[in-house]
Image (cartoon, rainbow, N blue to C red; front, side, top):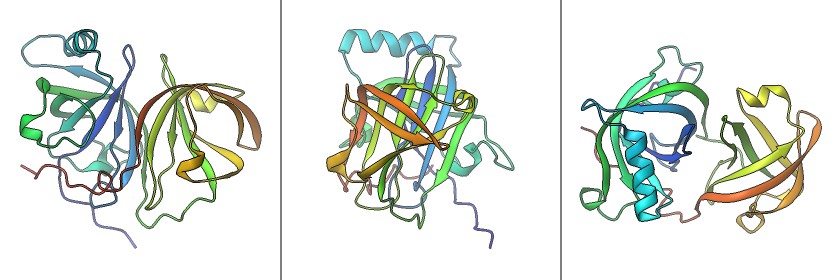
Amino acid sequence: MVMPMPEKSNHGFSLLGKRSLVLSHIPMFMAPHQAQVFLEVGLSTTDGSDPVKTYLDDQKQTKATAYVLVSDPLVLPTLAPDAKTPLRTFTGKLYRGAWPFDDLAKAPVVIPALTVKVTRAIFYRSFVNAAALKELTYYCFQTPETTYLAHVITRPPDFYQILSAHVAGLAAKAQQGIVELKFSKVANTMANKLKPKQETSAVTDNRRVQVQTKAELIYDDDPKHLGESMPAKK
């Protein structure tokens, strides 16, 4: 049965990277935000200013580490790599701070209007009705700047976590797409989440790889955050 496409909605994305920018959709256990999406993007503005410079300058001045891009209304599945009618350009605002904001109207705006161009749609997966995972599992994807590990989300209770890492032994396809790393015999619980500067091993495509995590970039295990509403659609 073909599921109907969701209506347009605002969506929040964590902005990661400096030279190679990545957007990670902020997942929630409520429609239409029940999906993990990773995009490599470029940013531009209509006034001719350099939004990447503005973003990096803001980081230097404020020492902030969390930035959230809130899109104007869009249909999330159209950002999938294999979308029938792919969306590869959209608009939004960039905020400083971690989601959720107590009051979006009062949240610090870094760039009030920008255009996002999707240079690589890395991954899309809906976790509606997903089965709970027994083993700790992470998505692994790479940009020219960073290797990322993102915890695979299935159902409550769960957690949103992304780390930078070094992974030795990955197949070539991981350079363009995404692979799953399964940490054998490690229960998929918050208590067992990967930690910064941890050395361990995982299995992907029937091969064992060595994992050395670096920094924890995002972590949220608050069920109220993963179920909180986004701004109303315009």
